[in-house]
Image (cartoon, rainbow, N blue to C red; front, top):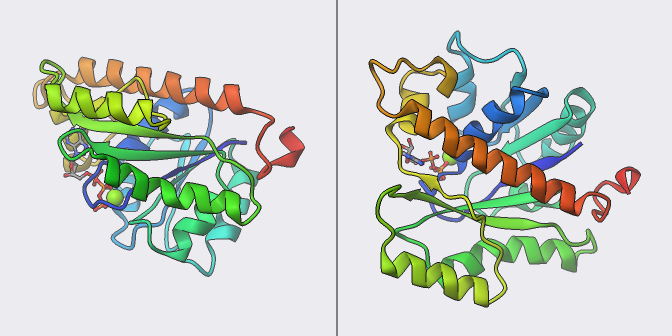
Length: 231
Ligand SMILES: Nc1ncnc2c1ncn2[C@@H]1O[C@H](COP(=O)(O)OP(=O)(O)OP(=O)(O)O)[C@@H](O)[C@H]1O
Ligand SMILES: [Mg+2]
């Protein structure tokens, strides 16, 4: 029953977008709960459109008082639980990370730097310190151009990897379709190719990202103290 949290200290890093993109892909084969822990409720608003897939359930109005119960309850109802968080410097993030099997740290390619990655991962390391065991994580580089790989971004990724930071091979490219999810309150599968460019490429990118997440979860299955019954 994997719980996946989306964490990043930077506003606009792509947490909500990547959570929704992943949820849609997983929902094609299994029910998913998205816990929308952002006080602005972007995913709950999205789900209120008439296009929310039947396999996606959204829970909002969570705060640090009830996040643990919300995750526990969601785990009983659906095999996958995704938690969209805001910032990192709050208890709610610590609690959600404490209950996660995987932490995804979206980071805009253009803003990626070692200091930011280190700050993002502090909460992951703190989980270990308070005795909840290690949790796998991956930095997801977002909003990169599918056509151009800047030398600076390539260099930073290489440096971070050398420093032992896990970075997803898949990047979530800058695509109009990912913005359109929220503009039209619809999943990728419901967007109209006459209105939105390159939906197919956005879908392929989303599939690759989801496949990498599933591989990472499988690779770490059984080693997570947050879920001893799975060991
Ligand atoms: N891969 C992408 N392609 C195109 N637009 C994107 C992409 N990722 C994010 N965006 C856009 O960037 C903005 C910020 O993204 P998002 O809301 O996902 O970030 P966030 O980390 O959840 O932000 P916050 O910290 O405010 O919750 C949104 O307008 C979103 O549509
Ligand atoms: Mg967000």
